[in-house]
Length: 240
Length: 240
DNA sequence: CTCATGCTATTGTATATACAACATGAAGAC
DNA sequence: GTCTTCATGTTGTATATACAATAGCATGAG
Image (cartoon, rainbow over the protein chains, first blue to last red):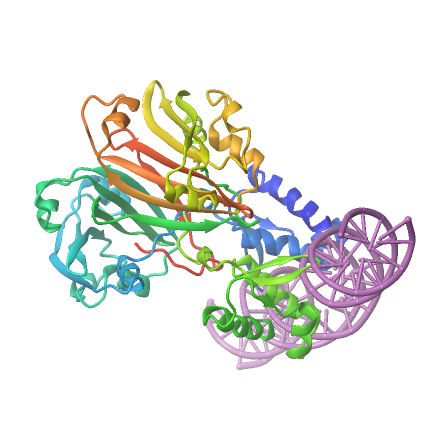
């Protein structure tokens, strides 16, 4: 197919690194002439590359190679409050801590702040039908989200607030199984230590990293579930 | 925009439940006439709904509402062997069990087999640089994959084999933190019990469920990671 | 009844065209 | 120098048309 031929050709130039990030891509008309097809066919190739996240197109300006990091595996997880409400269960939150603290050196680097800078810190326990199912330990970039400490997080979750005030572009996740610390055990109202699912999540806007959250769930009260179908569009086939 | 008007209209019918799963959607020509637009415009609306996973289109047959479950969170995880090789580490596998057993009642139902039917069962331990990082406990549908037991799973993982012989269309995941059983502890060569990340994964083709796998990772030796970017196409924004 | 054939509806690909909306830079007014 | 205006190139939307490839059904042959 002609449009696929064009796609493959552009694919090679981008993946080989011949065209780096933000490098301009030939316009629809140029491609049409080059490959001897109509503009609509060339357009389709560019459009599909755009849908796949390989190029960015802006009307009037042109088409450009997208930032490459967007390639790798992706993982979407719903907001805990939405999840609970979706199950028609009651949700409430208790704010355990809401303060500003000196950032750990590693965190300061990630947030592109000077060593010793202060960052916002919150610890919130989320309850489903009165039972603690998540403790959310979060650090937030004060430059990008100056008013974080003034919010009432019993009414809206930090997730909902951050979604409103920042245009998120990227996120990374890390999931592991751990035993909770003494302090986490208290926040989760656990009588005995038990294996917990711990999710570390970092989110970015174009201007830098916004937030790091460590979400800890008691293994006996929480499962993380997902369901997916395989479209043509998804290049990375998941494993079984 | 006209194509968006059509999309919204179809959106409502699907999300309200007025059109259930597999309900036929008006053809391109019907929609074109109904909304007084050209076929290409109606086509675009259907195409985008298809890209978003809301409808399924097959040439010659028509357009139908997609199975709704595909809506929820999605989660892609790489094959363990690929993952290890990607890190330039050594991977090898030990086949602990490879047998046919009578299916549990629940499993038989899921696989659409009569009660008491036999299914393939394999248990394989995966090693990264000589250290056990996953035990894969898998049940496979003998109707859809008759030759499963004849494979050499030290050469290719079950994942790779199943990908080759079946056209997967759907998958579900469940992740939780647990303490391993005595038997799992042996398979993972763990001296002491420790929290483990346990992933249950089920996969389907159009003809039915293919396989259920329970993947158990020692918390101290394994982390599940992911990175993503947000496109316009993805309607479900992940939480932070 | 069974199988083969062909018709029709439907989606997929490709083209040509027109106009709208926007970005950018150049030329000109002040 | 600074601002405005305009021309040009680019992407976005919409239409009309043609033909290809396929699925499903109906019809007919055996």
